[in-house]
Length: 74
Image (cartoon, rainbow, N blue to C red; front, side):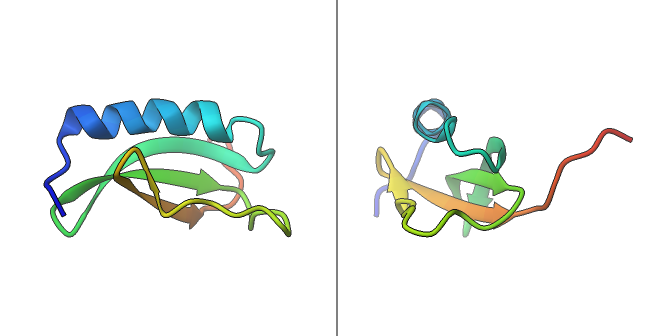
């Protein structure tokens, strides 16, 4: 796999924001590092609804999904 640049990860993040904004349990989309490579991280308040499948990558950038729970202001 070719190395993913920060610019590629930023582009994939924007694509993820557009693609997943309609999912009601999305709490955030960001950029992370996985084994030294940039990846897009999708934070969810709970599991995805039945029948919804998330891709393993966007624009060639790995997608990592984390169920973080609800985000609350402190």
